[in-house]
Image 1 (spheres, one colour):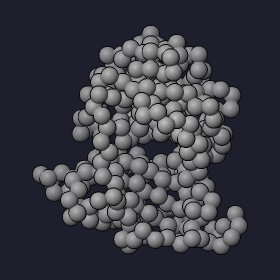
Image 2: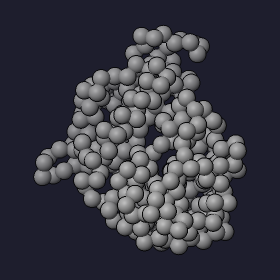
Image 3: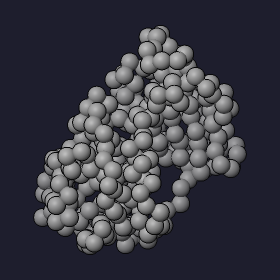
Image 4: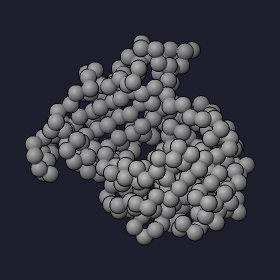
Length: 288
C-alpha cells in the first residue's frame, strides 16, 4: 500500500485545481507518527496536541479559517480506522489545511471554507546504525528566505527546502544544513539541529526563519536536565564546526546523532545516547 488519502471526509485523491494550497502554497501541514494499540484496540498519534496547536496557530497567523478540532479528530479517526482495516498497525499521518478553493488572484474571501487533507503512509524504515554510529551531513549553498510572519510554522511554501535538498545525490549524506542570508545556521532540509559544547546544549533561535519542530520543543522542555544549560542563540558555521557533538531531530526520526559534517568529525556525547533511549518511552510521546 502506497498511501490512503482523505479529503474533507471523503476517501479520494482528487482536489480542485483552484485549491489555493496548490496555486499559492496557501496553507499549513503537520507530519506525525501513529500506532495501533492492540490492548486498547485504538490508534493514537504521537504529540497530537502539539501538532494540532502549531497547525492552528499557523492558520490563524494568515487568517485561514481553522476547522473545529472535533471535525479534524473525526477525520483522523476515520483514516486511521481505514488504515488498520487495510493491514497497517503504524505509519505516518500527514495533515494539510489549505485556505480553500477560489478564483484567480491573491485576494481571498474571509469566509472561505478550508480544505482538510489527511494522508497515511507506511512507516519509514531507517537504518538502526544511524542511531548507533551517527550520520553524515553537508552544508547547503542555498539559503532560507526570511519571513518572520510565518516563521516557526510548517507552511506549504517549501521551495527553499526543495532546492536545498536537490544539492546532493550521495546516499552517504543523510541531511543538508541550511543557513539564512546572513550565514547563521538555522536547520536542516527536514530537521532541526542541536550542538553540544562543554556539556551545554545549543540550538538556533527561530524567530524570523525556520521551523520550530515538535521534537525541538520537547527536547528544550523535557530534557534540559541532561545538560549544564540549554541555550537558543544565533549559531555561526564556525561555532557549529567547533562544537563537541551534534544531533538532528524531527517528529518522524526523533533524535539522530551526527558523526560528520563536511570534514569535521564529532563524538557522540553520552547525553545523546540517553535521549535516544528516553524518547522511546511511550509516556513521553504524548499519544492521543
